[in-house]
Image (cartoon, rainbow, N blue to C red; front, top):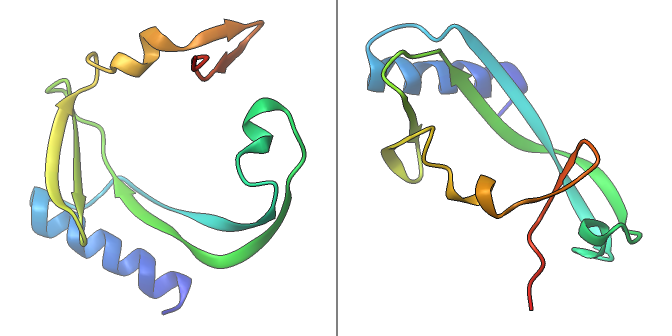
Length: 103
């Protein structure tokens, strides 16, 4: 599937679930971690390579306070954007958010 075909498919899934055209579409390419998987999370080194696979999406803003996700593989689900528990567990270092320390 080409990038354009993937973006078109994402827009069609959006319209099917939300009964309107999306305001924006995006594609985020993936990466292959050849060695050092997860060491980069702790400022270590990792050898990676880009790949042509990625996530395609279509989005629009909403005023209902929910983040609603429709996925071809996982169905549709929603959650309130102000209920992101992980945010309160993140540590701050300067202007960067870091994952919580695990003991």
